[in-house]
Length: 327
Ligand code: 2P0
Image (cartoon, rainbow, N blue to C red; front, side):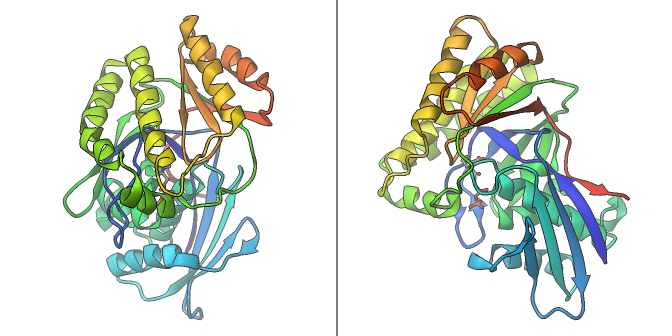
């Protein structure tokens, strides 16, 4: 009744921002992402008949179960698994939590993987498929979590009533490096979930963002299939800036960039203009993520390290999918 799992956060190149169904936390659009091998979450789940509710301990501190995200995800898991016991969940991130580094994605991917192992349902014959069942349960916790179930490059598709996730390429099939320029260790003031709801209601660009999104996603899949780095670079930066234009034109405005983020963006653009295979992406926080070919890693790391205001660099290769820890 107890198991642990490790998952890595992911960064979307074709992003999701907005819900199709807020009550069910179903994203409005699909997304395509890279799994970040350099960052990890380890989560232990223990079902316990003595508990009267789920308990969450994050980075050593018990958390109030605000907004019911953990409970909603665990309730979906229990319904699927036919289990009526509550669980003690202990989770540790080796990177800043809630600061735009997708800690909820790795957290919920590790949670559902550990929960299924705790009940002995992590084997193929148990009928819990990562791409459909686990993906659908994980996205109740976080819309980006299904992508962290898979390593390398992942594609999350949104269907009429649920999600479907699969791997587009393993880390070996398309080796890419990711350099995170950490510009703050602070938590964001507004959650992605609240921000998305506000964008849908108030941004004049929201409808256009949703309308064009399938074209970006299909183009992204073609870039990955063709291993066309520079086409992916142009597309991913464009998709990122479109998402931020929706965020910025939300009322009240969601301006996630700091001056340091912007300086890093200019640095990456000037490197690429000089022929370096690198592009940027930025999520709901001020950290900048640079994606590059492995040969450019040292150059990109040094250039971003030198941008005034960058606190530290986290760099690494693409990581694997969520996995059970066997000790
Ligand atoms: C993404 N983000 O595709 C986009 C880009 C942030 C910016 O998915 O409400 O933490 O829990 O589903 O998954 C962040 O959203 O939000 C996110 P919920 P989540 O990576």
